[in-house]
Image 1 (spheres, rainbow, N blue to C red):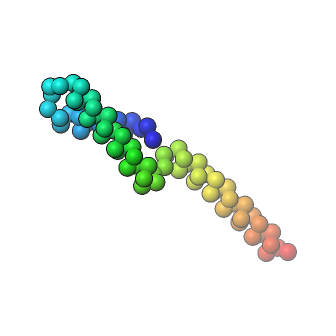
Image 2: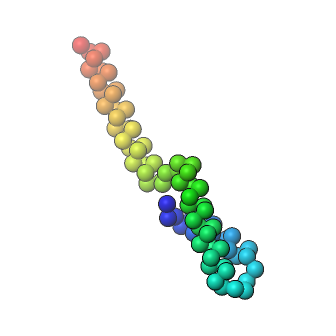
Length: 75
């Protein structure tokens, strides 16, 4: 889940690390990014795009069910 929000969060955390050894800062930044992404995957988050697609599918399904219910009532 590569997201600009994750990158933004990592950069904010990185800014809290005292400046100095750039290799150390990059290692910390990479580790933090991996930890955050792993955590987000474990808690089963979906992207906004995935959510919107599923919401659209659900709406179409609901409309079909309502249509079928109307047909059954009229018979």
